[in-house]
Length: 388
Image (cartoon, rainbow, N blue to C red; front, side, top):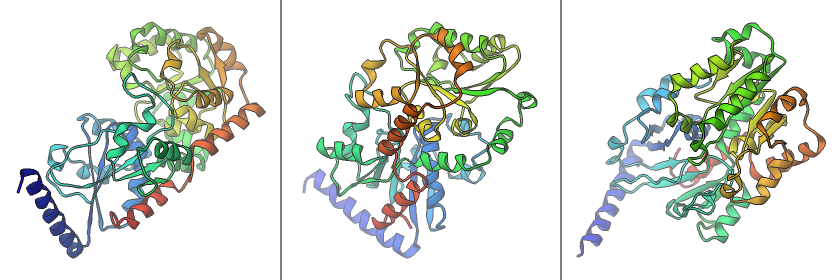
């Protein structure tokens, strides 16, 4: 018997023993592999669905040591979760019934488990190594794959990355969260968000959210970012600006330096910085300033004005789907110069009919099962005997 065949035999025996033990104990051990804060937010609705059955023993792990520190948010009741976060190393030897990932990093384990891949966005981006990040070669390595829409699924099948036996259209879990937030009273949500900030004492004509996406190429110019913020500050005397900085920004400046710069630019303190969950801010905002990112596509669901900053000359090089790009531009007010922002911020109040049509097409094409995607995914996991 070769060493490889011996290992395979031992794994089969281990799997058989664990199945018997699980049957006697009547439990399922579930691990959420959290790569970063946004993947945590994406997977959270599925966690809420799975925890309804007490037989599901749910744990979280992450390669990021700082993740737990960044999970402070008024909309997540995280107190029951702290004891469920375990170190990556301590998860290695445990026999998990299922491991759920929202990124293409496939964690390595000593004992065989079922791996499930769930998408955490829909923007068709590419890197120098991967021609379309939605269809990463690692998709082949997962036992089950949950897609946000049918077109992504069929394209992955055409590329021979998945088969119809192990791939399913569940929808994007974070859209369940955005859907539930959109049903809340906007003023009550606003009060809850701004409770700790002095800006709540003043009424602003408009709440604007800006969430830039920065790649390593964009980071070569900090001035690019400062020019936009400076322009927003000069045009925002009666506008509250909510900035959701990309984590990569802090490779250039510390968080303290970043906030000092904002304080200098906004003497009336008419800004907020969102370091964690952006979705409640999307709901209370009157318009959104974005670029080619999943948040821009998700904002279309809210049917509110979207400003697209088309300032990066290298932008098209990183877009894998020109048709998706065209559709997002059609749904937006496109800005080609930082200095055009002032006029647009003051003038934009409504979504035009053509933008409404484009937003409707984006939602129908890229997001399915909105409001119940996590329930549908849980049903699939139960049908595969991975959860209760």
